[in-house]
Each structure stands twice: as C-alpha cells, then as structure tokens.
Length: 525
Image (tube, rainbow, N blue to C red; front, side, top):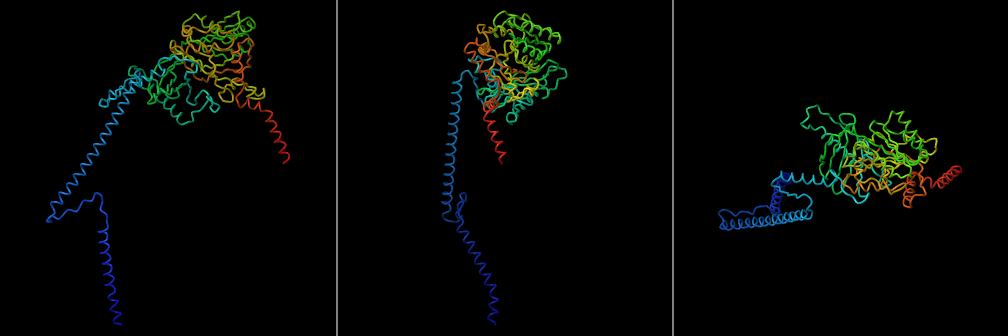
C-alpha cells in the first residue's frame, strides 16, 4: 500500500522529467539540422580567439570576390544592350536609304519637340500619298479603290460575295465604334472656336450629319469624307479626316455652298416613249436642274416632245433643251452632243438613262462629290431585279416607291456599270469627251471612265442610296458587235433575280415533286 502511494507521488515528477528531456532533444535537433541560407553570414570568430585576424581577412576576401563577379556581369549586360541599340540604329538608317522619297525622320530623343514635328510631317506625307488632295494615275478601272457610304444608321457597301449584304447595319463592334468615333471627332472639330468670327457659332450635333464615305488603302490608311447640314438651306459643311494607321488627323474643314450649283441632266433617247413618260413622272425638280434630251430619229419623236412639254407646263418647269439627231442611236454620241451644246457657265453634267430613278438626296451627292479640276463622281447605283419574279403574282407587285428597297432579295449594286456619272463640263471637255467611233450600246462609258483614271482627277466611286436602275426587259440587238452582244447578254442574265430566286425557278419541277411526295406520305399516315 505504501509502495503504491509512493509510486503515484513519483509519477508526475517522472512525466515532467520526460517532457523536459524531449524539449531539449528537439531544440538540439533543430539547431543541428536547420540548413544555412544563401545569404546567411558566416560565424565570426571570437574576438579573443588566436585565429580572429585570419578569419576576418578570409571573410573580406570572399565578399570582394562576390562584388567583382557582380560588376563583370553588369558590364556584359550593358555591352549587349549597346550592341542591340546599334543594330536597331543601322536598320533604321537602311530603311531611310531604301526609301529616299519618304520623309527623312531623325529620331533625336534628346530633342522631343523636333522628334514630334518630324513625326507630324511624316504623317502628313502619308496623307499626300493617300490621294487626299489630288488624284493618282491608274492603269485600269479595277485599280480604283471604291468608297463605301454610311449614315447614322446603316453602311452601304459593295458586295464582294454572296454572303455580304448591300445594306448593312454596323452591328460589328469594331465597325460601329470606328464610325461613331469619326463622327464624334468631326462634330468636335466643327464646334471648335476659330477665334476669328464674333458671331454666335452654330453648334453641330450628330443629328446634323447627312452622309459620309470612306475607303481604306492597306498601305496608307483610311480616308473619311463627312457632310453635315450648313447654316442655311442648300449649304453644307464638309470635313475630311484621315487615319494613317494611327490617330485620326483633320485634313480639311471647309464651307460648301451649293445654292447656285446647277446640274444639267443629259438623257440620250431613241423611241421608248412609254419609258420616257415614267421618267418624267419620277423626275425631281429642285429649281437647280436643267434637262437635256438628245433624241435619235423621228419615230415617236412627237410623242416624246409632247410628254416633255406637258410635264414642264404642269410642273412650271422651263429649264429643258430638246435636241434631235437624224442618225443611228449612239449613247456616247448623244451624251457628247448634249454636253457640248451647253453655252452657259460651267455646269455639273449628270449623264443619265431613261430607266433611272434618282432622289433629291442623290442630286446633293452629285453636287458634293464633284469639283472642277479636281473630282469626278462615279456612283454605284442599285439595280432592281424583275418584280414579277420577286413578288410572284403580277397583282401583288407593289407600287414603284415601295419597290425602291435596298435588300439582297430586291436587287444588287451595279458595280460593273459606269454609265451614270457626274462631272463638271470643263473636265469633260478637257478630258476629250466620249469616243464617238463606238456605236450602239455599251463600251463608251468604260472608255470615258478610264480616261478619268489616267488623269490627275480624283475619281469618287461609291454606292449611293438614292440612285436606282429600274428593271426592264433587255433587248440585245443583232447589229451589236460580238463583244457588245456578249456584254449585253451578261447584263441581261444578271438583271432577272438573285442566285437563290433563279435556283427556285430552275429547280421548280424538283420542288413540286418533293411537295407532292410529302403530301402523299402525310395522307398514308
């Protein structure tokens, strides 16, 4: 009993001794096994140790060696950077020597103001190369980069394949952001005070924006021409912007007054009195238009003259000229005669056909995109498909105004046609006019177009929303040359309907057979 009691009293002491022993062993283990860090200092010898002096000298020598190696490493890195900088400098000099015509940019970083001026001068040289101020001579009609037009709501673009639509809302974020940025920059530039005029300035907003055109040249940049409403009727404000693959630059800010700009609409004609009646019913009289009709032959001539005179009386319009030629029809000859017959001041010539429908908006575009000695306008019109194919039953065909819709199912951009064009009479005379050796239909328009491309004039080529080619059955005459007849037949084939609609006609029998089988199958079940 006594032994048991003594053991119980001794047990706590034994446990305490074991705990102390374990802790001591753990501390010894940690001190012995913990690895030394890379930056851990070496243990210094004791001050009174006989080896204290040698120990300090060894430590100092080791530290000195470490610093010496670090300095050598830094020198190597500096030498490598200098070699790379020298190589880049040589590359820049080689590029400047390779392109002596481009601006000689001296990148002197010690003079930031000079470097900024050189950069600005370089960007302006890019503007000069981008056919902003003057035209560039081109070899063929395919070399001209066409413009695309846009409004606040939509973009009108040339089709390059079956998947693209002639009318497109700028739903793509990059395109939408691009055009919004350009319009906002133009509005900001127009509202910027000039410091000269003391009159209360007109505050422009996006609602004043009328229309714009733009095109991108891959090796230069994107050119934008935007038109805004002016301070008065028939006055406009045009601003030109250029993005040389960098910040947008303002190129031009000018007032455009079209109040006195007269358009002479020249229409060559032979027979086709019913089409001429429709043309006169759709004709837009805005007080600044002169109509010149050049008629070939005498058949239906009196009827055409009567339509012209009666329409002018009802519309109180007297600005027209009727010219009659007793010879075989030639579109080029008719337009050339009509242009040279004008005896007044310099005038905008609009070469037009009797099957064309144009709006007042197009007349503004015609005036705004022509400039004597500088610009000619070649709009891409929207050509209608055969309404009887598009709308099916003849009784369901809507009115003409309701048919003028720009959609893939209703028509196409007539990008192969160059017959409808606006230019000043002085430019037409100076370029040499039409080739009068071309007879009949086709060819004369391309010949004139190439003349302008070979000149220093700027050729504005863009789809317009207010110019339509009305569908009519095309007759290819036997007296045409083989090349003209081929062109006529190709045009006839393209005018009927879209690929999908023509496919439905071609495979009509197969479709009806399929529907019949489906009907029989549903009856059996």
